[in-house]
Length: 287
Image (cartoon, rainbow, N blue to C red; front, side, top):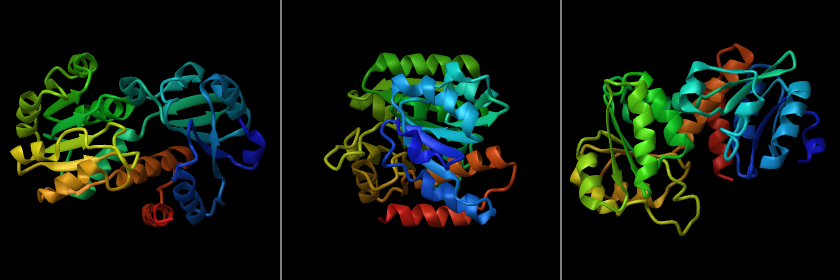
């Protein structure tokens, strides 16, 4: 953990790995537009270092973001968490106040904003399917359920994981329609796709250039009304396959933008400069 490299920072994004993060460019554009300088950096923190980092943050930072794999691991070091983060079971935004750390989750807000911007859909009454049941799916599913989604379905290679998450969401929101399917079960997956309006690809497939789509793209053709979103912020095999079918698609950059906007507002109590942050994010992605 190279703390000397971030000695001048008051805000950070931490993770392992974290070198790929575009958050510093985006957040510093926001801080700068508000006249607050460029105080945001990034720091690789391994799991064994997390406790030491938490102590450092409580004494030296005003806030930080968390990416994989620490969104759950940070919880024991926090003095409190928001109701949203408690439902999500994870934290991606932390405020440092009077020597204590307080956690929140803005991932769900980020996905809500991205889906509204890309497809014009609102969370109320939404019919949603997630490929994958990791941290991003969990946090955003609870958020959208709380915002009035009608149905949320989970498809995962390990059916037990999908069913576990489904039970948790259903217990918290009894009126929500829920169901699961194994990723390998074509018939079951297509049945859920036909009942969905929005599909969110929330697995890690697509991070590597030679990754496949989580499902054969032709499966998506069973519902010509599908809107297809990928949490990875570039064109992926999933998105390319959906676009070839004529389905509306969007990658994860707007989700990153809106979750970052919410983090900045939590830290500063001010309205974030959305377009300045968007422009900086777009420039960073073109490098």
